[in-house]
Length: 249
Image 1 (cartoon, rainbow, N blue to C red):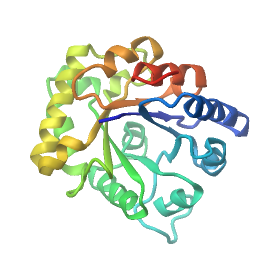
Image 2 (cartoon, rainbow, N blue to C red):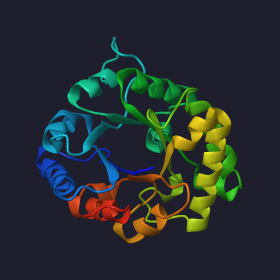
Image 3 (cartoon, rainbow, N blue to C red):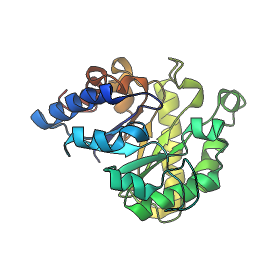
């Protein structure tokens, strides 16, 4: 199973940032890595990013609406992302769950919308520091797997991104043992929910992934890639993480 290295630019990036995507795409073309590369810029840049990527790497969205069209001012459908050149979309990111109050049911509906449009759905799950300190991390993440991942998910349509919320943007990272334990539990729950198809769904780790810690994290059992935040904004840092996954940065 090839690793998937996905960059989430969040609310960062203007037209002047597009050369960073060009640098990643050029590097991937000149020395193709044995990993799948995806960058998810803000919606305003998706179409131009797809042009800059020149089909050498994949471009994705950071969110989508569950409906294909309608009177939903300010929203973007999965079909619109596909039309702009995207091949994937992140749904249920912890920041969407926290700041927009997204529920597991809404996340599942968005994942189905992604499938409908022919996009890979990257479904995010993760626990807060309070949940982990209370010994509830497995139960919280397990509940999100049960209710955010629609039936029928496969490795071709879906990836899971495990985000320890307390590690995002803080510079803190769980121990390798903690990452391995959670990813193994997620794998078991995916198999329980999806059957054999659960074996083929990549589980990305997302929580302060940087060039300095990427190799160790990506070598961990059941870690099928990374969802990279701040380190994806600069091509040099992002390519170093790609290289750590077995590529040729």
